[in-house]
Image 1 (cartoon, one colour):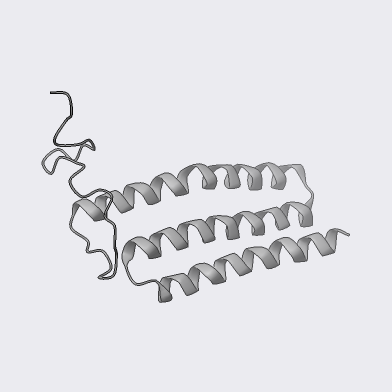
Image 2 (spheres, helix red, strand yellow):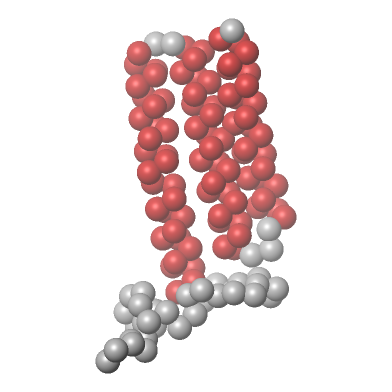
Length: 122
């Protein structure tokens, strides 16, 4: 039974990492590439680490693997959001067929603080 779980988890991990690598090639702009790769690789590495937990079954390996998964789940989305925000502020162009720019006009160009420039109720 453990062998089947190891194959399922490692197979899912490899599948998600494959999706991330295809996403790097297929997506048209930086922001879409960032979104696809962060989500898919976080899941892929998480599943591969779960398969190592099952394979080794040792307490030290289990705690280290679960700690890595926890830190990955906490830091990857935050890091991706910060990278995306810096890219937007430095002028990385959106895809030419993008129809919506939700940040346009919503932040101060000098301080890079989010918030509407024209505040209602003033």
